[in-house]
Amino acid sequence: EVPSYLNEEEEEADPSELEESIDFSNPNLAIKFRSNLFYYSTDRCKNWNGPFQLPDFGREKLLCRTDYLIEGKDRLTAFIAASKEGTDDEGQPLCIRTTDGGKTWENVGWICESPPKDYGYAIMPSTVKLKSGAYLSMIRRGGKFDGVKKWWIEPYLSPNEGESWYRLEEPTIDNGGNPASMIRLADGRIALTYGWRHAPYGIRARISEDEGQSWSDEVILRCDGANWDLGYPRTVQREDGKCVTVYYYHHPDQPERFIGATIWEPSLPED
Image 1: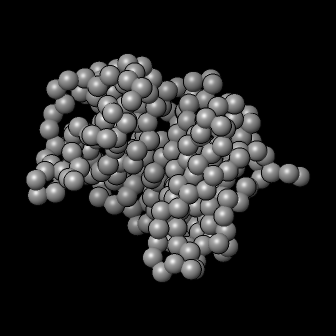
Image 2 (image 1 turned 180 degrees about the vertical axis):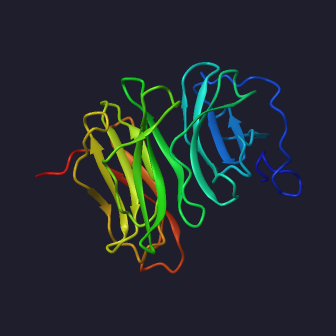
């Protein structure tokens, strides 16, 4: 079966203009961002509409990865990345918004400064809305220090709906280069999951009980990876309170990488 967003040649269809506003209040809605395009489904991902073109926001290309907050019937705020200023290399994150159901989009604000042109990136946001209305976003970073390349994730906070941002000190995590997944738990806490690309390789998590001001020690979800080639988690919480974290993984007993999942209880680590 050919997915609905591909043409008869099983290639991605050319983008079209969104003519009818998307109802973001639809409980069966899903939005997908990829590259400079977006798609939407109104039947829980069984069928898709799109692709639809995003503006370039003054950059040579966009590097979208799905991360958004629904804030009303016609309003959605997304967190994406674009190429660095004056180049087509990745990347600098930004906050964009539609208030007319996806017909038009505006650049609300850049999340951090554009990294150096020679080497460095800030990409793949994962964002939650705090109880104060502020946005908290974890950004995947790469940079060079004294000639040595390093890779980590770090948090940024916007107190004014994405217009301006500043970097927080914690949690800055040297995880070897891997995007994070951050969700709001049913009890109000925040759960953060990420791939761990240092030995012992695996998937880890942290919990915040105070809106991201402080974080628990690491919860090791698994640590049996064959090497660094793993991660990119996505986490959801089930109705029974347990979390499901899905990721790609490389295990010593299997020659090929695979999609794995860990079901875990989001309790704080014991002292």
